[in-house]
Amino acid sequence: MRLAAGATTEYAAGLLGIDRTRLSNMESGIRPFSPERIRTLACNYACVEKSYVDALIDMAGRRERGWWERHRGTLPSGLLDIAELEWHAVRVQTAQVMHVPGLLQTEEYARAVFAAVLPPLSRLEIELRVAHRMERQQVFERSNPLPYVAYVHEAALRMPYGGTEATRQQLEHLAAQSERESIDVRVIPTSKGGFPGAGHALLYADGAMPQLDTVQLDSAHGPEFTHAEAQLTKYRAHLDWMDAAALSPEASRDAIHNITREM
Figure 1 (cartoon, rainbow, N blue to C red):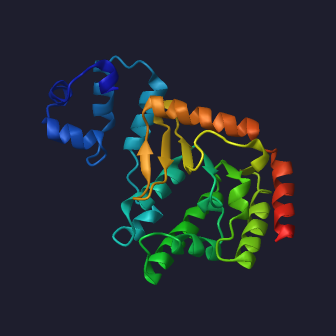
Figure 2 (cartoon, rainbow, N blue to C red):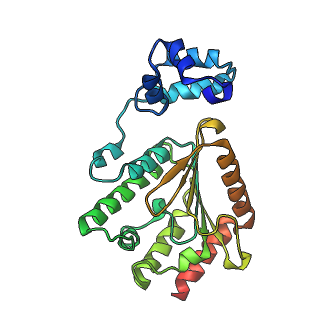
């Protein structure tokens, strides 16, 4: 809102009677924002979209410690941020081209995925990551299950992480999870040829308002997050392409079963 209004940090800090360093920490989430201060800034930034302001106030009011905090100090903070992002999202869409999405992985398959990381992880580091990945899946077990759409390229289904038997069990689990009401698994067949964003894993988390959407991308040095509107628009277009190119949920389930039988 501040950038859209063309306001400086000095101006905004003056509105709240604080110094610019504290304001920067508040904007980045290091320090808390009170509802009153959010309303003060929104008014002076000429933001008249009440639902957007209310959504920001709701975010600022969250003070509970999430389950992921138990892993702080033992896992990279980026992994904890992914768990927090999924927990608070209104909906999550993901696109995977090399392996099954993390929220739908079995323990053995996840263990094989982490074992393929360079530089190699220790056995303890692998087990900590596997435990965290399994805990992330509780978003499907709570009273309001996370709506989840997974676009999975056929190549990812044929990649034998952990060997043939582990992959077969993973595909059977994937097909079973796709039967759940809150989960859609959509397979992109290799016959579709090239596609936008090829090679990049993508997680798109819908916020309470479109302005609060977030994209998470995998990289060799850890997860990256972006919420810039230009980037969000680009990745929405990627997901629209995948939605049009992917098989239906029913046909995707059949494709998963067929690949399983071929192993």
